[in-house]
Image 1 (spheres, each protein chain N blue to C red):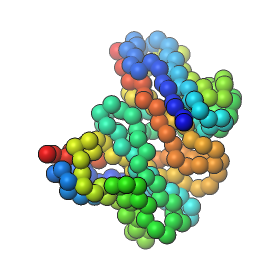
Image 2 (image 1 turned 45 degrees about the vertical axis):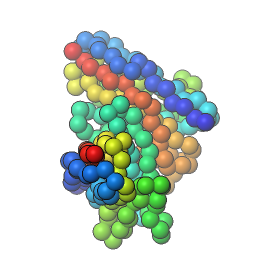
Image 3 (image 1 turned 120 degrees about the vertical axis):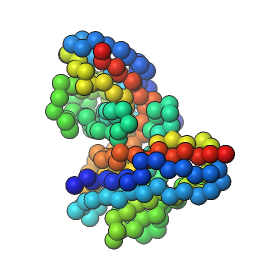
Image 4 (image 1 turned 180 degrees about the vertical axis):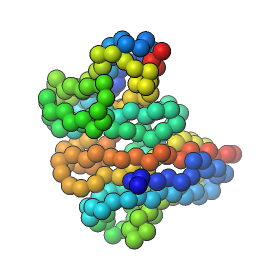
Amino acid sequence: AQKITQTQPGMFVQEKEAVTLDCTYDTSDQSYGLFWYKQPSSGEMIFLIYQGSYDEQNATEGRYSLNFQKARKSANLVISASQLGDSAMYFCAMREGLGGYSTLTFGKGTMLLVSP
Amino acid sequence: SQTIHQWPATLVQPVGSPLSLECTVEGTSNPNLYWYRQAAGRGLQLLFYSVGIGQISSEVPQNLSASRPQDRQFILSSKKLLLSDSGFYLCAWSWRRAYEQYFGPGTRLTVT
């Protein structure tokens, strides 16, 4: 089974509207974390937000929030008030276990297009 | 502040030729370092990671290798490139005992 599943290959949203990008995960670890990264056409991966499995509150970073539903194993990214510059690929990723380093498993991504 | 560099930015190489991609990090010490590959339209696949000089762990067996000759330098190499080695190669770093990884600008490799 895939560890990270992003079921939306592409999403369209109008400027200033909110959009939710879906991510479900599969792990048997008790300690894990979920990430969202943005990849614009330039290729660089930009860290957006992180949620640890023991964090009780949903993570927020400016216009980004992570809707973490542990029982459903979902970690959806919510972008409020979309901007044209939000058009990019978005990747959900997971780290598992504890230790002095983290290896990440990435989903296949969702392409978000924001229209004027 | 920390900065991560990769070069070259783009590379076109014939099948069977050698490869050397370089990644350097500035503004930090003892980082964890990572090499990822992204095939066209796909997610990232972890290739190698390193927690210290000379310490390399491989995630995927292939004709690529990695080395860390200095604390903030990570090199991805191949003796003979295959067509399937084409892709976008990203280097990343993280603090020790931290989870967020920060990525460099990437190298786009085309093997012809």
